[in-house]
Amino acid sequence: MQVPSAQATAASSLLALEEVSCRFGGLLALDRVSLQVQPGEIFGLIGPNGAGKTTLFNLISGVGRPTAGSIRWSDGAINGLPPDRINRLGIGRTFQNLHLFQRLSCLENVLIGLHHSARAPLLPALLGRRSFRQSQGELRQRALELLELVDLADTARQPAGSLPYGSQRRLEIARALATAPRLLLLDEPAAGMNPIEKEELSALIRRLRSRFDLTVLVIEHHVPLMMSLCDRLAVLNFGRRIALGTPESVRHDPAVIEAYLGVSA
Amino acid sequence: MSDLSLLVQMGFGALLALSVYLPLRCGQLSLATPGFYVIGGYVAALLSTSWSALSGDGAGYPLTSLALELVVAALVAAAVALVLGRPVLQLRGIYLAIATIALVEILRVLNLNLAWSGGAVGIFGIPQPFAGPGGYALATWVLLALVCWLCARLEDMRLGRAMAAIRDDELAARCMGIPSADVKLTAFVISAVIAALTGVLAAHFLNTWNARQGGFDASITTLAFVVFGGSRIWLGPVLGGLVITALPELLRPVGDLRLILFGLVILLGPILFPQGLITPERLARLQQTL
Image 1 (cartoon, chains in turn cyan, blue):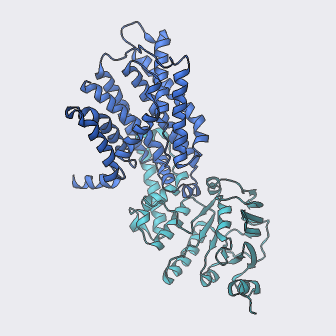
Image 2 (tube, rainbow over the protein chains, first blue to last red):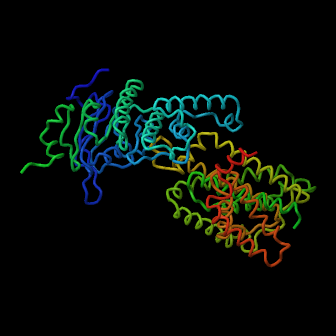
């Protein structure tokens, strides 16, 4: 896979944020943030707590709307669109604080992600005809394959809420993949995982990218993981983008060091 | 009351319970069911008493006319639900419940005061398509079977899964591409149609129709069906509707105690079975033991 250069241009980008701001009352959660994500790259978003990372995800996925600025996807503005429309345009996401359908089984969680692949003629569905049962069987097969991909095939029948934390995070990824996204937003996918799981997750994300031709935008606190995983990184602090570039350049950026470690007197 | 008449009423109870259950299945506490039930009843009462062409040659009210009423009532209820559903379903939780109670009350007051609905007296002498309660029982239970079958099929279909998703976590459902507003509206419309169809049968069965058929009391009663029976799988509301409708009659032999016993059942049901009598887990366990 071709890794895009650090100085990518807006013209070729898949997702472009232009001067995006988001204000909650007196709090400016995002302050004129601009960045472009290129097709096929793994783009990381890091920053201290409260820097506005999740807010940025919410704006991209339509959960919130920016107070100023524009979000462009492929070649159209998507700010202000509802989340279901944005998902159908090809943007899938996971949640930092896990939003699984707790009482439903893992398989059902993924089947719900396959909603738009599950369209079936009404009458055969109501009558439970063979054509419908066949299409449902194929759907289940696809869901199982996705579960297998994240190593959850064995727990397909268990309620999502009963899984251990790390498995729930992987189930969220499978469910998001079921919606056939071109861009996958991962909000702290490694939170609560042990070091071995974190390594496996990193490999999983790379595997998924090549298998599904994905572009990945990932938020994560674990900086070493991000340094090795991401092609490019943006650093947010107090709602501002303070750095952008390759892991190597970001690591040595004085503004980043200051944000993470504080200024020396 | 004859046994067959009781069967008819139990069927009505189960149907109305399913009408409350469908919006609940996608997390929407709508208490509009009695309103659509009343609309269905008025459609039947008005058509059959004021349009003489429907009455046929005099040897009993023709079943084709009844079928026509069912179609018209379904269409009217669906149209009303479509128009009201969009704005009303933007409300969440208890606010939706309050708005739908208001809807039922508005309908009741309108029907009480408008000339064409017969005012407080209502509409009398609704013709009988069936000679006795046996025919009504058959018609009601056929309708009930159809609605049960629809609800059972829903479990297998993507609409049913989308409804379950919205109930569990609407935000996540929307982020997975599910147009939650459309799904909720669909459930609301189907719910309205079921209630209206029940109203048509009820108007003929009762021979008379008036504004008192639906009101706040009816909203609470139909909700009690679902709370008692369970709202997670269609069998729950059916059982709740059947049992709670039948209970006052079945308890008749104990005399004055029956209201106390009935109250106790309503009270203890949710305490002992907070999720209702029937839950998917309990059903699965039952299947295993059988």
